[in-house]
Length: 388
Image 1 (cartoon, rainbow, N blue to C red):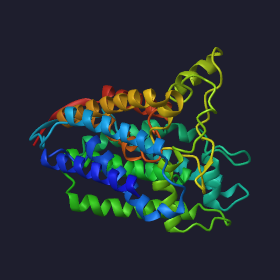
Image 2 (image 1 turned 30 degrees about the horizontal axis):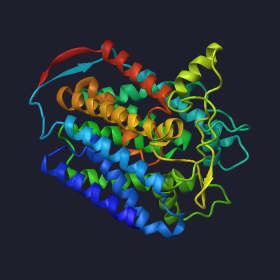
Image 3 (image 1 turned 120 degrees about the vertical axis):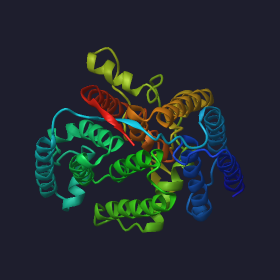
Image 4 (image 1 turned 60 degrees about the horizontal axis):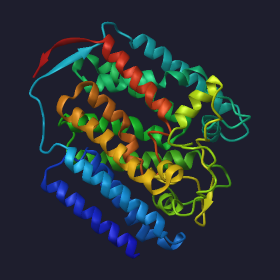
């Protein structure tokens, strides 16, 4: 319990300093601090359900949190930067019919995948999305996710009355994709990205943000329990304890001797490319091995790849890398909006999900595809006019 109270005191101090400096609640500093505050509050509530939080795990968290917070404080701009004017952009063609066809195709594949399998409809969708043998894959339509997500971000960064139809169609496709994969983060990602875009443009009051957060959490709970199998008797409290608090506990119980390849998780993308070209071993599995804490879990917070591959030195370097990358990206998004705002909003899920695992490097291939799709969309667009 001492670790939990100490962590909450440190986080509260950071949040207090952020409030004094009027740092945006959408900044990496505040988002990360709020996430870890929730983790240790959950730790106090559910501490008796898990093994003790080990010294190594708490020290690792202290190193990570203090380094990232210090760098964020040095980089993050203060105050509010709302521009009276901005350059709006739009694509030089109406792609709504193509987007409509993609929605119809996706809905059709949802029906096929959900209807073909040994489990119930929603569990079939979930087991298909994780690539389990014997379940119909979603297919080629899933490959359009980076492009549609990029269009979703682009249209909301440059939201205006005449692109409302496109924004609605993008929302429908993104939510249908969340249904197709039955993934909680697939639900959270478009909502969080939209909230970050609206918030940094001064269009989302805090009261509405709190309400949106509660509604999104309920929607994620629905997705979790709807996809559950008949043998899953978990409760809401078990869900909260397992997903929020168990990863930081599991960090201290993972087998550090299990890795044989140098930098297998930090440089997983390099291994994947090298293996496809025939000169590198197979990349590490995305689905990590389970440990007992005492319930089984296979998520170890954002610190996992750096700590697992390189120990404390890797943790320090990883924290510096993460803080500079997201800190500078937020600075650009805050000051210049446009494509930088779209990229930051797309990757903000890695900041909010850091209590679960590393969502940036582990999913680097998908993140790179979204980045390239955004660059393509912005390159194909053109300036329209100044609007007040």
